[in-house]
Length: 393
Image 1: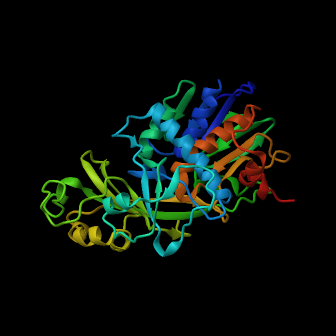
Image 2: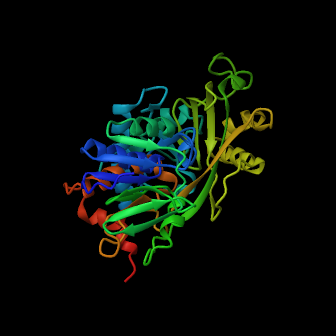
Image 3: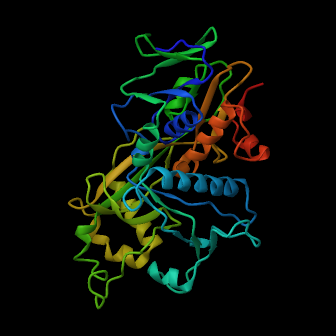
């Protein structure tokens, strides 16, 4: 337990993507950081997702969400390049977005050159018809979140305490105190960052004036082994085989399909998902969601979906499910919650399904803000991310 008044010490609740990113960015600035998590080890929450994408959002008016996710993807890819092993932990593959129903459109005058109309060769490589509307994101790729979390938590200056079930937080003098269900003090600090996704709500809701409207979003990913595909998808092994080939890069647009990435069990696998179920606070793996992901694959990549129909049988398909945390405007809540009434209490949560793309950037924003450094985003953008936008009058 630390009672030090040293302003360069901080306490972080949550050892997932958001919490580890905050801890890493603070430690890089010379802070001593203690991270508490109720799990016994890595990947118990949404950061246990086997693999996901760092890819930007696009919009015809290049709206704020598009600009922020573009900055977030850039920060995430830089972090991955610095900390992770290419090919096993992450890869800058590019991502093809199947623009189903014309839901996504590029600005007429793009602010960057990272996203563009997909070429005929890229569309063909994905196994889609030549006339398919699609966008190519050059600065995008897949990442295994658990590996990123582990690397960030191993930073000098970061100490992780597992098995710490934080039940309540309260301010005592100038210190924030966290206690367990028996009322025993787990730790204290002048600066406390709550970064435990939807679990943040149970901790913060009892505090007077807290009004950040965090909501749960359950998602399930279906996956299987690449070795099981060899009999059905022989195009990679036999150029004369008529079956469709697996895309050489991830494809998204209605969920995402990723292949050639290690599974949690070790061997290389393929992945499709995830489902989206709002206002669900439990995350079991469900058979009906495997069926939903099969439909998702058939919509995203019709030929491949047909060829892989047999992979969704109970003897082959595997699953992962977790809870993400969302906010109504799809932008996270970052920074001091209410600096007047709750000084020293911060949050980094509400990444939704874009945790891989946003958590690193939000961690950098939090650490720069706490360290009184220039912020990594324009003030007008920060205003829309600031948790204090929800502070009650």
